[in-house]
Image 1 (cartoon, helix red, strand yellow):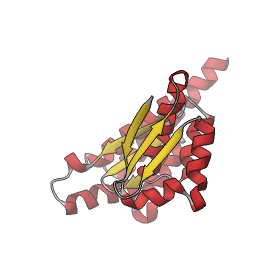
Image 2 (cartoon, one colour; image 1 turned 180 degrees about the vertical axis):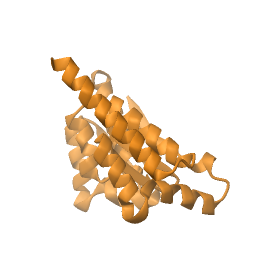
Image 3 (cartoon, rainbow, N blue to C red; image 1 turned 135 degrees about the vertical axis):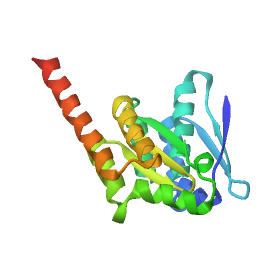
Image 4 (cartoon, one colour; image 1 turned 90 degrees about the horizontal axis):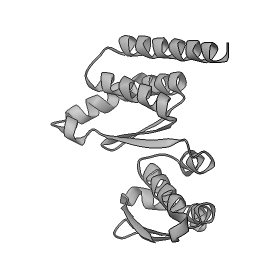
Length: 181
């Protein structure tokens, strides 16, 4: 069984790692064989029939690295199968490079504070890279982080977005309390 993934030239080195260490670790941990064509940016991931889930996970990790996550952050998805990767493409939402920069700027915030705050309040990791925003997190928090990012894209003021996150955080604490008592 085989899958192909296209990655950007600037991320090939990150995927391969120093002396091939990252690629080797990914192969070992997912029981796959990975071939990288650095000229084309084409990555072939091969696995066995009974190993389909590991193969798909390897592909997801390659996608996460391609979307700007460090291998360490992406590899967290091997340890915890409940972690998901979601990629938001800003390409279709921006009519010009200037508008794309503005959208990215709103999500990152001044000195990276908006992104940091969303990460802290939802426990979701965020990478803003090229025309995409990639998120790694658990299903429920992922939905909340995604909603916050969508609000920022739509132009909702940052303080309103943070108030929304705060409310969601309180609700989930309340849910936890009522679940246990």
